[in-house]
Image (cartoon, rainbow, N blue to C red):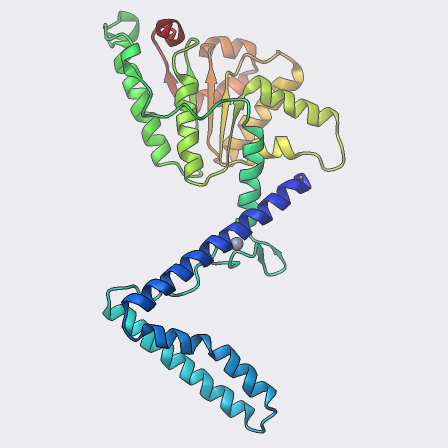
Length: 326
Ligand SMILES: [Zn+2]
């Protein structure tokens, strides 16, 4: 996938930051152990001196270099064993003073073998997803401030005798669980119902939680994301497929307000391509629409309708909350 070169620089910076933060923790732990565990400070000092000793042996051009290096290695190992024992005896894990790596595979260098490590690709995907997700304000939307009191508790025959509040409480619990247990692959969700019933709020609350879990998440309105894909498609420069690829490949896509975009052939085929590709690869998508399922079926192709129908359907009911809040 072709990302702008600035994303690669940002990714390198994030890895550098990880290395720095891990080294800070390592130093803090070393200081803590030196102070709290008696005998540890001396061992740590000796261990730190091993490199100098090794250099001294090599530079000495002594005929017994091999032997001396072996001896030093043995001494080093025995000091490490002593240190582990000291740690254990003082209630610390044996590896408490080991080097810390966020990615154990590439040791946070971003390179494994001759190629970019998967952790580097994951960081790139997060950067690209974040770049695309600027059209919706995620800050104020959490599960904690989703207020059920705005939904009527009067049972409605149209809702099978349930009240909008009961239905919305079920939706809220479902979304909380969904975010908590999020993984790839997992179920996709189709939320439908009138304007101002909390679909965007709950989807963004899921997105926020999933971002905290370090997944790559794209959230945006269908008109906005489709416009960006269209621009990219028609301004085609060599290798410019960043937007469509990110939308298709991110861990979670929240496609808000489906049906609000212009009804063009290009958009319809894009929507199918996105939803279908993601479902085929088991990548979860949350689709929101103010249109009822029948309206969407009339507007789009049967193929899109049947893909949406295969998702977990959540119906939102009640009265426009924005009106109530005013
Ligand atoms: Zn890695």
